[in-house]
Image 1 (cartoon, rainbow, N blue to C red):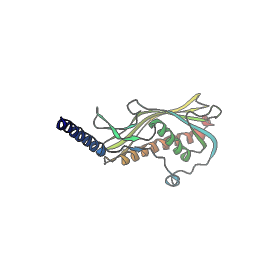
Image 2 (image 1 turned 180 degrees about the vertical axis):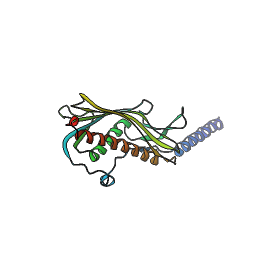
Image 3 (image 1 turned 180 degrees about the horizontal axis):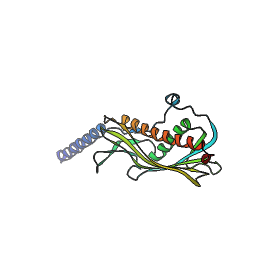
Image 4 (image 1 turned 90 degrees about the vertical axis):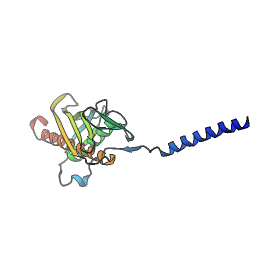
Length: 208
């Protein structure tokens, strides 16, 4: 009887050791954020004269398949991969909105940029809304962004511009930090386009 108990205990102990060893080998989850451009990166490209107006950024809308913690990569035309151990440190829509706002604060002549939802007492002269149609990486090839964006005036009451933009950044590695950096670059490209549009609007009778 004692031998039977000892045998069962040995089996349970062995299973416990195997489970613990498996847990020890599990990779830890890494977290990433999109990054805005710095003053030093922009000082040669943009030197806007500040004017007294406010830009509101958002809402930014994502496709449902991207609105998740896992970083999504495209393996083929119809197959996606969700990275369980490589995730966004904050909701992607919020991260995208914040980085776009930070870039516009450097690239545009606005003296203030706020992110949706802003306080009801905040008077917004230009509102930028973005619908992201595609924002993904094809492994070993490129990071791509396709976005439909609008510019409104008078607290979102008057549509003054709408456009759809496509940007690509070459990615030749499967390293996630590099892929996220490439995603930041295509967001920067969109920021430049929006900043140029707002600057043009402020220099025309329609924008005054």
